[in-house]
Length: 373
Ligand code: COA
Image (cartoon, rainbow, N blue to C red; front, side, top):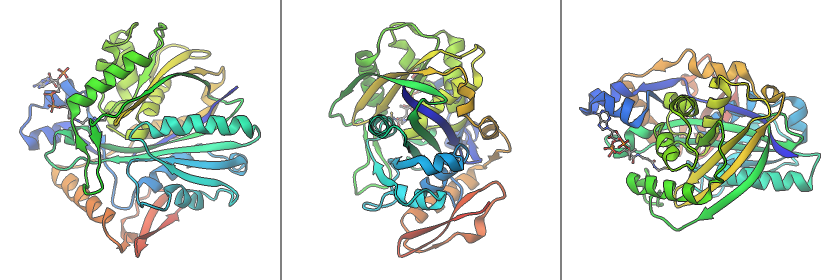
């Protein structure tokens, strides 16, 4: 049996309430909070990037014993730092993983994390004593006053893939790929080109095609915004009721879009907020990455699935959040854009007490990270 041994998450502490954004943009706040379903969106702070977020997520779950068994690190992102060098090399170094590890970065919009997970499972099948660390880390940035501004967010998921997993066994389902132009980010652009309505159509069509038609207590979805769960549920042969649907999207509504990690954030939402005893339960999982690739699979939770989670760190996602004003949000995201396109950086003055990993500086475009604790 192969699957997810441990699952960890990191979300930046700095958040923009969607009512603040609505007032600034002259939009009825109900459109964002009721229509789109988002309460807040997490924004990266000055010295965070996809590497620091991935390391924070991994740090919450990895023991020294796990680290010694990791043979490969797959880093799924659509917020790449470099055309050549994989973000996994930075992450591997900062996390102190063995030098004999394979380190690769993967891309296919928000689907790469799931693709990486299935590649990791195949690797573990042929190397049964080894573990693979799959990191998903993204910053969803669409630009000020864009249609997608309300569906931004940032965060990371870390998954440890192994034989005899603690959390749950993964069972492959059906997958499909099509050439679509719903969302992509060409080399000339700092932000994605998005046709949101087409993307919802592609998502629903592909979900219809790959779903397995079994009734289930919960199906988790890739959620670019919380109410995508409602639209996904509408095309399911056996839709969930309102109460179960709200459990699937609760965490996403507080975090926003984290691209590759979104589906796994939805799974964590169920694991944290479900009222039922989930031991032995099979949960449906729908992965979607624009462009477009979709896959349906299931996870069957182990009796002791909670031993694969760090509940303290998951509860901390909701605690001590720092609400940004509109001015702070604008200045933070201007800083973010400048940072991503600067060859030299010194961010050493921005350290916050809650951070374990920070981006300290960049020299000739090469990033230097620090582990603080
Ligand atoms: N009160 C309550 N609800 C309201 C409202 C109000 N005053 N005004 C509008 N709404 C509802 C609409 O009825 C609609 O609900 P529905 O979808 O259930 O019909 C919802 O709010 C959104 O309104 P809409 O007019 O469709 O919003 P929009 O044109 O601004 O587009 C997105 C919304 C999500 C399509 C857009 O933000 C987007 O493209 N985001 C990017 C998504 C993405 O990244 N996709 C690719 C990755 S999978």
